Amino acid sequence: MLLQLLLFLHSLHLGHSLNQEGLLLHRIKLTFDDPDNIFSNWKTRDANPCNWFGISCDSLTHSVTSIDLSSGNIAGPFPSDLCRLRNLNSIYLFNNSINSTLPKNISDCRRLKHLNLAQNLLTGTLPSSLSDLPHLKHLDLSGNNFSGEIPASFGKFRRLESISLVENLFSGEIPAVLGNISGLKQLNLSYNPFSPGRIPPELGNLTELEILWVTDCNLVGSIPDSLGRLKKLVDLDLALNNLNGVIPNSLTELVSVKQIELYNNSLTGELPAIGWSNMTALRFFDASMNELNGTIPDELCELPLESLNLYENQFEGELPESIVKSPNLYELKLFRNRLTGRVTERFGKKLAAVVG
Ligand SMILES: *[C@@H]1O[C@H](CO)[C@@H](O)[C@H](O)[C@H]1NC(C)=O
Ligand SMILES: *[C@@H]1O[C@H](CO)[C@@H](O)[C@H](O)[C@H]1NC(C)=O
Ligand SMILES: *[C@@H]1O[C@H](CO)[C@@H](O)[C@H](O)[C@H]1NC(C)=O
Ligand SMILES: *[C@@H]1O[C@H](CO)[C@@H](O)[C@H](O)[C@H]1NC(C)=O
Ligand SMILES: *[C@@H]1O[C@H](CO)[C@@H](O)[C@H](O)[C@H]1NC(C)=O
Ligand SMILES: *[C@@H]1O[C@H](CO)[C@@H](O)[C@H](O)[C@H]1NC(C)=O
Ligand SMILES: *[C@@H]1O[C@H](CO)[C@@H](O)[C@H](O)[C@H]1NC(C)=O
Ligand SMILES: *[C@@H]1O[C@H](CO)[C@@H](O)[C@H](O)[C@H]1NC(C)=O
Ligand SMILES: *[C@@H]1O[C@H](CO)[C@@H](O)[C@H](O)[C@H]1NC(C)=O
Ligand SMILES: *[C@@H]1O[C@H](CO)[C@@H](O)[C@H](O)[C@H]1NC(C)=O
Image 1 (tube, rainbow, N blue to C red):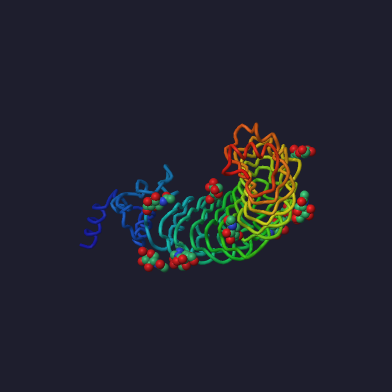
Image 2 (cartoon, protein in one colour):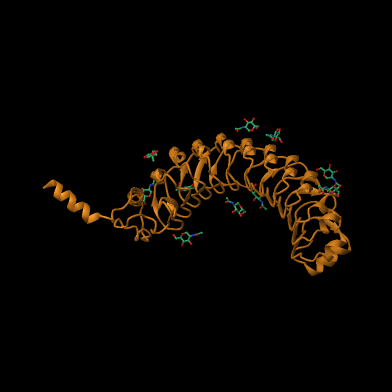
């Protein structure tokens, strides 16, 4: 009798029963509030979850490799059970309402390469175990309420290429060990209430770096010479800090840099007089709202800049004639300086609102 019942149940499900990974995902689905019904095609009568919204599988083994529920308007805690999916290499939960802490056992997601939890409601400190993920390449935790210090263990990341912690509540100083992540290409730490600290000179060891974004990070002290070693750097943003001292000559060794933002600091002294001609990629330079003096270097004005902002400083003398021939310049703001001379007057007529 029992045997017959079992056989009957078995035949009923034959070829239809959902595999283990599907059952696991189905349990995870139940932990979320889902007002927009993004889970509507997650049906238990499927054999596997490979055609479910947001799920990708290996085409041969049908094992889940990726989950992408970005902008799904779902709410609930971070689903650590995802780490039971043995072949999972990507988690994209960008722009939802994930509202827990990030659990220590995130390090069980051994194959993880991409972790994007940006724009959620995550809180608490970052687990130091994150850097135990041996394959992690891209980590984006921007736009949450993570707090505490960036773990010192982050110096151990071996394959990390990009990290973004922008717009959180991180405290402590930017740790020097970040200079050990030798393959790092993007370091985005802007808009965090760090304690007053220096730019670690060790960041100059990150020779693969293309983006260094540390806007509004409570940075003090001077810009380290070592940053000149970042030959692949394209975007340098040090704006809205309390940096002082002179702009080091080594900055003109940034041969790939396209954009340099230094506005609203306490930088003093003169701009490097020479070396600018090495920076053939430079298009945007902004050192407004500092205490810079001396003259505006001719070599800087000879670059094919698109935007040059030096307003609210103490520059004096004449604006170099070369700026007149600049082919791509669409923005030039020099007001509140002590500039004199013919070129300034001419531009003064043409761009009365912005040049002073
Ligand atoms: C975030 O998700 C909502 C839907 O929940 C969408 O309307 C909004 O455009 C998304 N924002 C971004 C920046 O993608
Ligand atoms: C997280 O969101 C879920 C679903 O909206 C809610 O039930 C839970 O109370 C929230 N938890 C916290 C800590 O806010
Ligand atoms: C991870 O840890 C949390 C507690 O922080 C626990 O609830 C959960 O079951 C654990 N997940 C796994 C996959 O071990
Ligand atoms: C995040 O932090 C901000 C600023 O401290 C606070 O206003 C907000 O309520 C916090 N949100 C959550 C989900 O913790
Ligand atoms: C950083 O690298 C240096 C030199 O390789 C090493 O001595 C140091 O222990 C490393 N620090 C961390 C936290 O990995
Ligand atoms: C870092 O910031 C840059 C500049 O805004 C942006 O293009 C890039 O996507 C960011 N990287 C990450 C990992 O968030
Ligand atoms: C990293 O940079 C610092 C300071 O610029 C230097 O003292 C140190 O030796 C460098 N470490 C490595 C591993 O290159
Ligand atoms: C400059 O930055 C400081 C914070 O570092 C801020 O209080 C101030 O309003 C900023 N000034 C301008 C003109 O943006
Ligand atoms: C940079 O420019 C200076 C002076 O213009 C020159 O002496 C130096 O060799 C250049 N360096 C590089 C790396 O191109
Ligand atoms: C520029 O300012 C520094 C102090 O910050 C001063 O020592 C130097 O003499 C000034 N140079 C000029 C040309 O005014």
